[in-house]
Length: 252
Image (cartoon, rainbow, N blue to C red; front, side, top):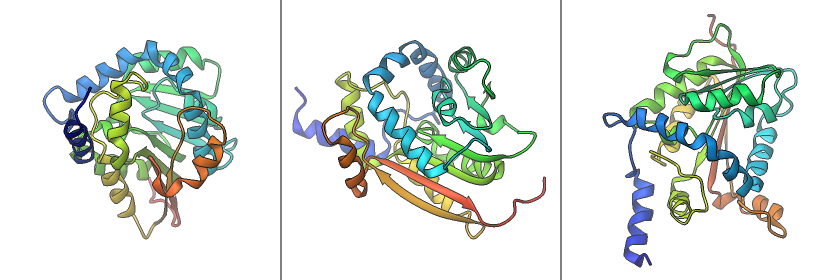
């Protein structure tokens, strides 16, 4: 059994961003290898926490609205499940995991979706998208990658950008859940990156309006879970930031 002092250190380290950092030599390749390994087991984790994924989808649909006439870029799309569930007019998913992209192409063949195994820093769309998403992505970047990544998201979006990630103050609970076998392994991560991403998004004003929300998605379906999810927002584990463009995008 873990002693209380060790538990406090786990919480402090998670908030400070002490876990594995992709900025060290070989770190980015380690992130890629981690998600390549997780592809086969992801379906099992989705079944285990299906209520969480349904709540996540509901949160994004509320933020974005109907997408039947919109184009969407999903950065860090994994197997493409979220992008497919949002049902855009046209969607592109990016991920550094080739195994994840291969699975997305198999699972969603025939839908108006395209999947590419490419790093965001190397991606250049032919035309911008109506909306750009980055869900649980920034924690896997190195600190110096965060602000440039946000700038690219903004440059690729005609209408809005949505970023979502774990609240750093709650990251230690997820780390413990992982050790207990109740959560998919996270791989190299730094929870505090979501705060840096929010700051970079806020710096884009006055050309954008910014709205921030917290959510407390219950990972299992329990009686009145929906009410808890909505009433506990101020103490949420999930941070969502939505930027909407209020000025015309620059030409080109």
